[in-house]
Image (tube, rainbow, N blue to C red; front, side, top):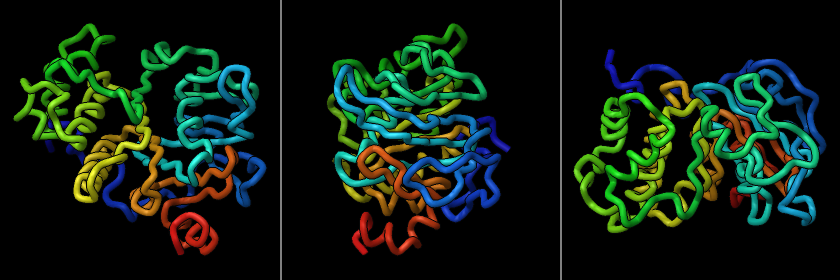
Length: 274
């Protein structure tokens, strides 16, 4: 047994493990063909409808959920509302219908800053690091809401991403794309989040770096932290997913475990290239 929670035996053991029973039940939203086990989920964006400002709705009755130790992946074609669903969960747009609950608490009206204080860690696709600051300073900034000793958490992040320890005094803007993403995820982990949300974490990185990032994401899930992720590399993301949500035009089109969606002929034909 190790003191590093990122190396414990909790949560996912490998990409083949899913929870076939789920927890609770909820009536399927329009566009899905099966009940979704989400009414007692740790995080649930329930029947979300909304858009940006006074513009048209982008999400339509969209439901996303994830439990501790799970990786939930949102995939779909360009313009499907994937990142918008993530932002809705994080409070970056107002819902005209639906709610967001975290650990049983309704947080629908809270600001993104208040949601961070409640335990949400969010890594946006771009602009997710301070390029002029060192790696270590970026991690310290991630712990800005904490008042306790952050050194143990920083050591845990360095254990998860060893390259960051080597480059801790280097400006983050000088790092490669994959290393920058590690800084961004590490900074989010410095808040000691109850939930980690990643918006296209492998965008623009090589296949080798993508595989490495996915391995680290699995390690984080093993600690029990639920992970909600939007990902453009659908096939690879579904291979590590406990839950998968395929969105089309802001609606739930297909929902199931990662294995189920990978095996679904319609999903394969429409979204995974056959």
